[in-house]
Length: 308
Picture 1: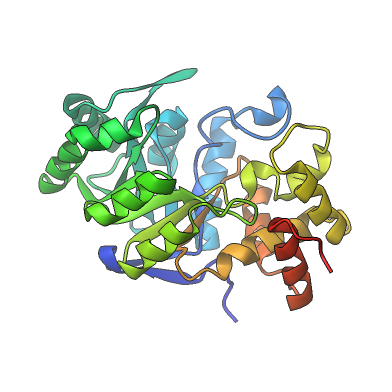
Picture 2: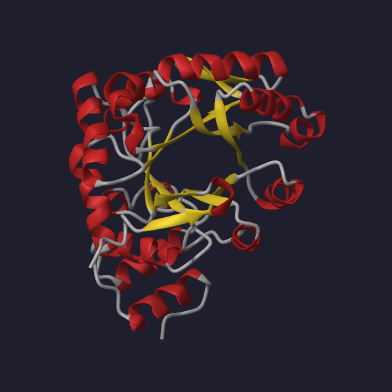
């Protein structure tokens, strides 16, 4: 039986398929992560190259990045541009790198320049999916329309193939209904279901859905076992879920991924890592058997009901 993580899910608006597990390339380019400063530090060049090639060697066919991920685009271009035919490449515009910070500029000129810069760094002739990387004032960005206009012009010029947006809740619904976007990237996981109706609507319209935060920014992953003293949203539910799986972090991750896998509207779950072994572990977690009884108990906990 084929790996669930490598299952190909169709995106009708793109007339293509992507693997259920996609690679989120934030951590290979920017200091980020659960834990202390050392744990959050991005990997060196050699390790970043190993991770990126391991992603493709494993069979994952979607890589998602952004200028705001600092060195990420550059490293993708350096280490896997020669394998460009093996993956769907998604990046973003609107939030720009000014390492160690980022800044926002959604003007037509800035977005067009950003797209050209991304093409250069990624060492590719075309980007498959260009997504708006929203920040403050997303409603005004949509209403002004400069960003979308710049993206559409870049598409006419053959620089990008499809338009996307990384957005949640009501503005995600508006983006779906606008007809402008082929892909929406949304936050969604076992503990946060605010975008569930948006995922359903996008699926009905053939729009791809990339999930960020599928493992709750680490709190639904094996990492959480070592950081139970940290402040986190829904901590009481996380502790109940851990108790349910006898504090087996891999079993918690398997539950979180199984929840996403059961939603047919989810095209791909973006899972990132800065370490080679974690990439392979993420795929293996989805293969962990989850009994119906365990799944239902976890679902009740997530919904705020005591497990029976």
